[in-house]
Each structure stands twice: as C-alpha cells, then as structure tokens.
Length: 103
Image (tube, rainbow, N blue to C red; front, side, top):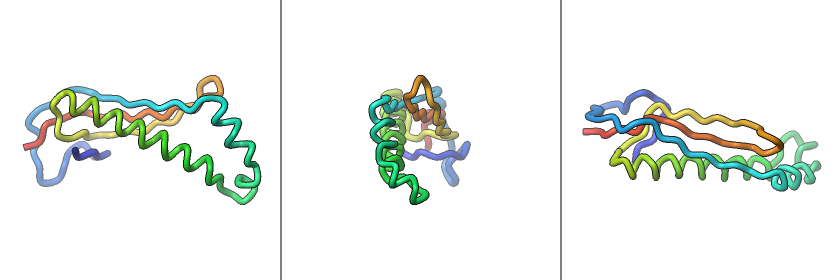
C-alpha cells in the first residue's frame, strides 16, 4: 500500500475515494516516567529511549491506519498527517489520511 503526505500519487490516477482513515497509539504514564528516568540521555541533547518509543508509536499508528484502509478496499492513503498530543500524562500519536483506490 502506498502511503504519502501528498494529495496524489505521481503518475497514478485516483479512481475512487473510500474515506478518512485513522490510526492511533497511546503511550501510558509509566512509559513517560520510565523514559524521563533516564535523564542522562536528555542531558546529552537527545533521548534515545524517548525517540525509540516515539518511533514505535508512530509505526503502530501508521500500521493501524493502513489496516483500516485495506479493509475498505483502498490501495493507497494520501494526505497523511501525523499528530502528537499529550493528554493526562499520556502521549498520543495519531495518523490520518484519505483512503483511495489507484488505477
């Protein structure tokens, strides 16, 4: 499945729209607390553990979005947007886009 932030796929024609699809991943409070417990990573300018967890959450959200698009019969997701939010000490990563059928 093609997943892109652009509104179209170069060289391909969109022949059908299946709707908006979303995938989410939430990191609980314990994960955040554990990540910040490794303060030595942060003092170095970057937190490798935090980046790894964010990457895992992003991959989960994108995979969930792709699964939902495939269930609708889509062959691509265009206009993908990634959002990061903190809600009650939990980090949420949300991926959304438009499921489409390409020629």
